[in-house]
Image (cartoon, rainbow, N blue to C red; front, side):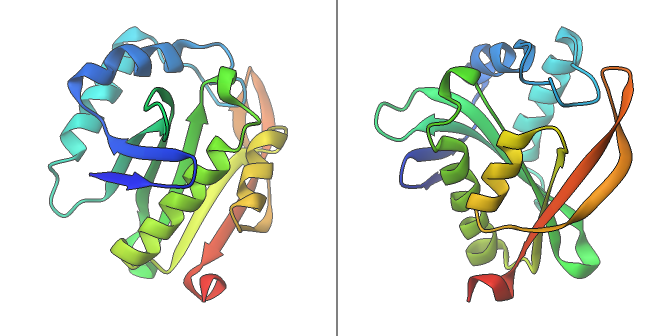
Length: 176
């Protein structure tokens, strides 16, 4: 499966994508605002799970390699997963290689995946969470049309200290 945005191509992973995935996951800035950074064994396990999720039925996770639309080089990852089936809520997340920050790729990827989720998955609500100190991720949420639901106090252990987390959402009614 491939989904095309203005600047990005989102495509499902193949086994050949592990080298880039590993590089992104091991980059020191990828997990700067997260609870912990995975080791190589966890990265391999996570990648195998991504490959296995493609064949799940019903499908509750869509993970895509984020590529530059024009030269098809991988530049990041994006994922949407079922968060709460009863209310048709899905959670979106992304990581971009730092060489490609501040170029509009993450925003386009988020918008593209949100459009896919509403048109193809018929979701009601999409949420995104970020460490409150991660201003770039919060800017992506805003530019993608998400609305701030609130601040969750000290819900994330990051670099051995408790951190606050912001939550943003977009509803199907926000897009009509």
